Length: 150
Image (cartoon, rainbow, N blue to C red; front, side):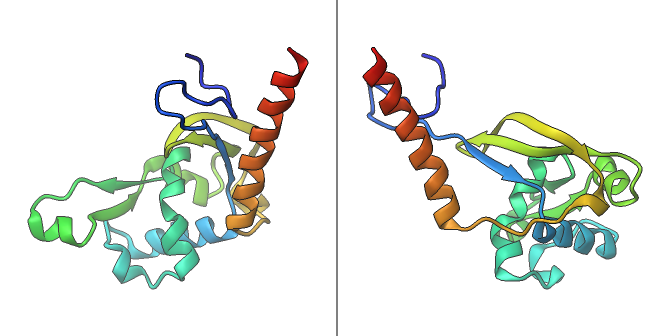
């Protein structure tokens, strides 16, 4: 069965919702914190705001940072350490551009889209719960309209 936004799974009844994320100032601040740390670091040591803490995992979809697999149980309880990737470092140094948006389903990257942007072109802030609710509703409305055309 294809993954079409707004489609309902006939087996479990779940509605497939694809979310669009853009690089923003909060994610950039997280990347800069990792760069200042200069080594793999636990999130608790970065002094992140609640928005940065909540949204930081999105940077992995661009390949800009990654979590290191915890080496032991103590590391695992701290959530592991994050580090910049070589691409992330090149991005912060204005050597490369990355696509402006990513599309995800259940936390997995589906595709990238938009013009490539350099670090100094990032302008937007975070989206909020209502914004994501609107994305979901638009997909549901689109699926409803497709059914009405049949």
